[in-house]
Length: 450
Image (cartoon, rainbow, N blue to C red):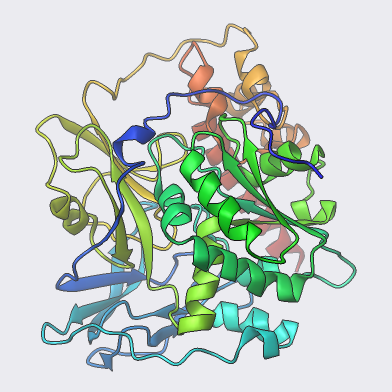
């Protein structure tokens, strides 16, 4: 038995300021319904979902409006009672234009759910369970938005001995998972039981960073009242403790080899809020139509944790939180380490939106980039023991094949190397661009060979 030990962690990593105090004690509030919702068809990793409604259709809250576009894809549902006003291109958090379903809210509706839960998960086969999760539109709510059912579909020949639940929330500023653990512990524990019924893991670990003592206490209390083979593990506060490979290393003491996944180490890793969504679906019939979002930063008037319907404009969310301060300078979806900078507030909240962070001009500095001085700080910081300095030099020379040979695709873009670099080299950005170019090249070569 591993027990509770707040020194459990992985090697390397960094210690940025936490800034959790803005919202860690803010209870989850419900975001009021707004006049219009915009729902991009690409809100998850994998194939976009396919619309099954058209302009003029009346839809009900929780009704499926788009079906999965493949196995690595999920369905999408209406966040409100309303009318479809169009399916058209809209700007997404990634900065790209993508098709989206627009819904005008029925101003006279009570917006109550009138849903029937699916068949009890305990009565389902594994295949039926996986399909049901896909139909619910559930994705990883830690930010990556990977379809949850794909993880839950253990391939033939693979075994899952451990379920690792991620409650670390190591990204500075963000507290949505923290508040979910404090306020929705019953749903999380129920979701664990649902998943365990089909996975049959030997052991379930719930990893929570030690800076969330109330969440640790609440989850420990709830787990103790069950017969689940589960244990809450307090982990050292360090970034990126919440990355799935780092979580596995911290708790099991095993490293995931290059090019491998946690399942290759007989482990399934899932975010805490994703597990709560399982309970909402199977017990109440509520698909993923809303999520908890932390609205925070020094340039927002009222930092909050909000339960926001998917498709709500960021502008509406910010206005509900008292609006921006005069010195607001930068908007990010997510946290400061891995969040995406936004050029407009007219972007919808999507399934992967864990936070909206507003920073002041004093906090956003444009640093002059200098040549690499080979200090080795990036090497010491990288949690998966890459050589970011070498990768950065290869990127500048356009030597992408050499980058791949040096395990570029093992990088999950945590930003630790850029954070510690004294020369202000945008290492992560160069890695992201290099990956894109490599994928394009590989796709062309595959098409040519076909």
